[in-house]
Image 1 (tube, rainbow, N blue to C red):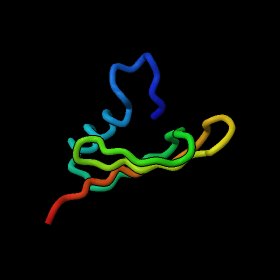
Image 2: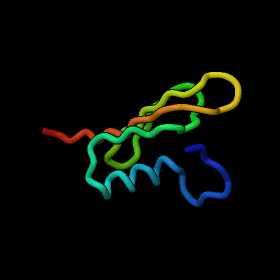
Image 3: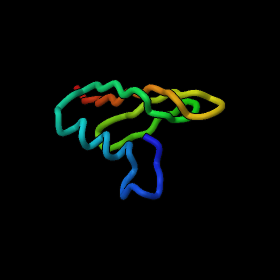
Length: 70
């Protein structure tokens, strides 16, 4: 999920859109290669992630969670 100059959009935006198309409320993403941890909003989804704090980005996990109002 690292952003680079060869992609026309952020990968998190792509993930948010694709997960929304499936209708899934919670998706687990592995091998995200984000550094440390964070959170951001992409459309209807909140994406939470944690990765390796130092050294090469080799691992990481993220969750895309859609919060629906009741």
